[in-house]
Length: 65
Image 1 (cartoon, rainbow, N blue to C red):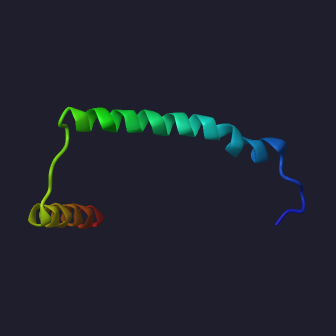
Image 2 (cartoon, rainbow, N blue to C red; image 1 turned 90 degrees about the vertical axis):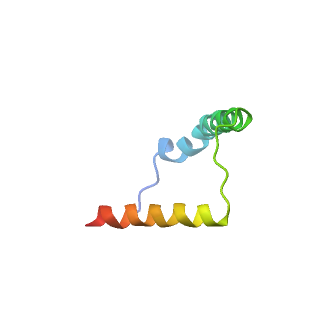
Image 3 (cartoon, one colour; image 1 turned 90 degrees about the horizontal axis):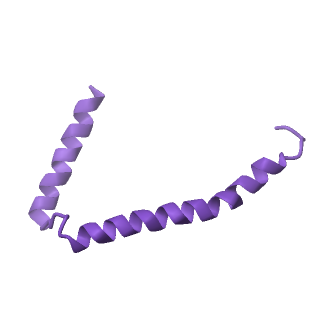
């Protein structure tokens, strides 16, 4: 561990990035809202959600091999 003080850029960047991160998040929310409003989504019941998880699990374990 260093006894040096952090550089000012290292301390300020997270706070400077907050407005940018907020803007990006709001843009993503707007996109998602438009998709929902236009019907671009899939409804799942318990059985179809279980099948989706099984398929994703299978794909994930297949990639490890």
